[in-house]
Image 1: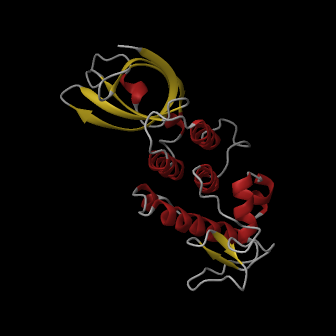
Image 2 (image 1 turned 135 degrees about the vertical axis):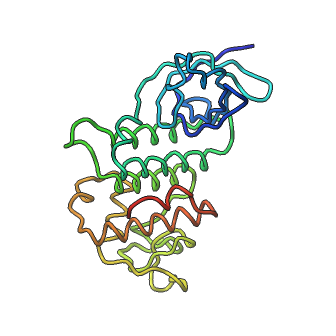
Image 3 (image 1 turned 45 degrees about the vertical axis):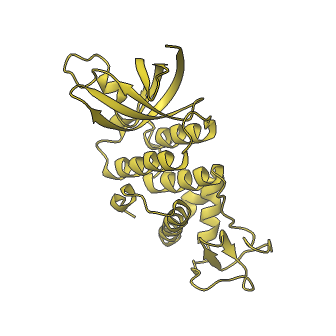
Length: 246
């Protein structure tokens, strides 16, 4: 069988037979890949722990008829070790994995930007230096907005999502694509506080100075709007988002 090598983040796993496991991966160059890891559930397996969710790995895979087969695995970054002891980071991380799994739907197609966003988000939450580590909710919100933008669902915060009129605006609608001017406002639009849309724009752009200076109310409102926007475009909610403390 032909072989190929790639780096990946393990998104999820489930059992196969008595000793094997099917692993869903987001790879750097081959997008979303489902592969069989044979024998990894045996106590004698030397690399089963390297194929657990949150692990950034360097893999060698053999091309199979239905599923590829993992033949080698080397750990690059064990993100799980920096998430497991912190409920907020762990739950935020599970949302990131589930979002990546949902947004990258075509198996075998390159998804480099989504891969880099996921690795960057997990790295930001598990940074060893506390001064470089961001709040779990803010990292999650930034990741969700950026991954949606890469997938083609970029929200508008500074201009009206319908007519393009420059803001600031006082209405926001997930179904309309973001901020709305008074003329374009649709029924059911949210009316966030003055600084919330600025926070959302900063989260999308990665402007952490603005995010760090935001008041708690704006951060909470921003998180709620990000969740609503995500649910609208994924068409059904994420199971893992229910456990995130907002």
